Length: 154
Image (tube, rainbow, N blue to C red):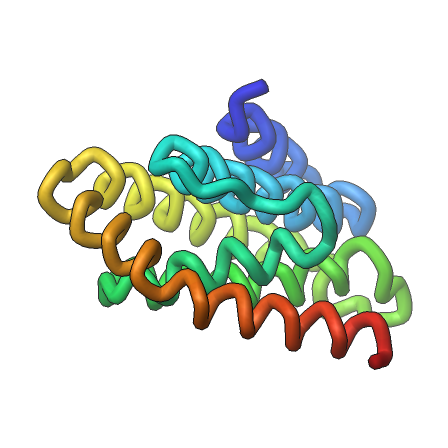
């Protein structure tokens, strides 16, 4: 499946002004950009865990690419993950279910996916990012270990 299909669905869902559609739009938009980033990282030869820690792993790898745009995207992914959690689990928080919010998040995801694609298609830039991620692998793994311990309560 192409992650862009999640984006297309998110865009359609955001056109309906009710809580379920808006929350679902935010959730699908997040998974569109997350899986798009995963595919880019896998194309570069990096595996991403198919576990909850995979979300942080993508953020860390983008951050340690040492590319300013990808570092910003790393932060945006963290924010979007928080929005996705609110949309899916925090039903007592109505602020996340407005159509304006849903459209804003879907629009943001579109821009991020375009920026990710542009960076990945630039051979010189993507080569630099690959090397930076590879060289920072010990840091990435240490942060993942710490994150896993935190979520496990260790």
